[in-house]
Each structure stands twice: as C-alpha cells, then as structure tokens.
Image 1: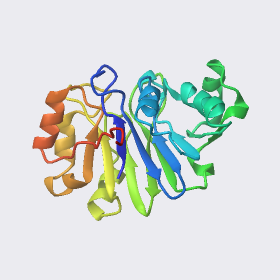
Image 2: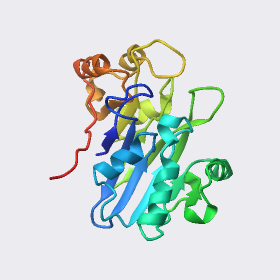
Image 3: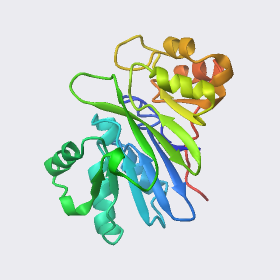
Image 4: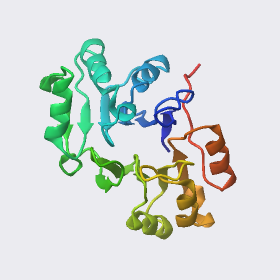
Length: 232
C-alpha cells in the first residue's frame, strides 16, 4: 500500500531516513509520512514530486531523521511548484508552527492541521512512548478505502492496535523495529511476542538498524517495505 523513500534508522545512511508515501494518481495528491534529513533529496532525485498538485505531510515526531527535510520541501513547493502550500499534519498545531518559524519558514507558505481538524481523509493520532524530550505519534488513517496503522518511532505497540489487527479492522500495519534491547524503539523480540504468525503477513517492518535486522524480520514472517525507485 505505502511505498518507502527510505527505510533506515537515524544512522543507517545506506538505506536513508525512514519515510513512506502514497500517491493518488487520479487527484495527483501526494501523502508523505515524515520528511527526514535525507528525504527531500530523494524526493527530488526519484522524481516523486513530478506532476504532483497537492501534498499532505504527516509528521510523527521532531527528531531530525523524521523532520529535518520538511523546511526544504516547503521551500521547494513555494519556489519551484508555483507557490503550492503543502499541508502539515501534527497533533499540536502551534508547536509545529513554532518549529517551522525557527527555521525561517513563513506561516503563509504552508497549512497545518491537527488530525482531528483535517477533513480530506480520516486520521487518528496515537501518542507513543519514544523519548522524554519530545512527543511522538503514530497514525491510523484511511486511504483508498484501506485502514493503515503507521507506528512512527515507539518502544511498544498499543494493545488497541493489536486487537484491531487481529479483528481485521487494520488492512496494513507499518511498525518500526530494532535489534537492540532498549527503551526507545520496538525490540524485535517484543514484536515477535506480540504479533502471532498468522497476522504477520499484514505487518511491514521499517526503520531498520542494518541488513542483519532486515533478514531477521523476513525470516520471522514479517514484510519488508517496498522502496520506490525512479521510474524509467
């Protein structure tokens, strides 16, 4: 369902910052989830912005590998896409405006909405447990009639999401994972424990530390993300 621009954790520069997108080819509406420090360059090089008429960006949290390219993308829209105003989705609207002002992005160059105030499609935010200094969110959204859960960075999976997965209420689940047992990201062993084998076909892992973790994820029955390459 979603395609990925990059699928790596902060230091995995070989596969790029974790970022996913969905493009509605009929309306030319590009929906992005996170724009990390390496993401803007890849958006341009892979020509993902070509012929796009509308952009909506969901931000999970403000670590640089998830938001570091947002300002550049907004400037690209303003200067190279004839003043297009992208829409930024984040639960705290004023906090997002404050962040963008701090990097000299003007209020009139974009729109910002909390999920509850956004009407183009259904979005529900889930407060996640990641780090103490900043808030982090996952999103449950409906695109093209499919219900998608995207975890963002988190050290756990909400029980309500697991129940929705088991009951068939979630069509696609995108879950970050790490092979390191720590308190900031979802440890692979915890993921294996919480998601029974019969449901793993709906779960795509992301935010990989390295190739070794990608291989382990595949061996355990989870999916690897589809990383988009430039069309010929």
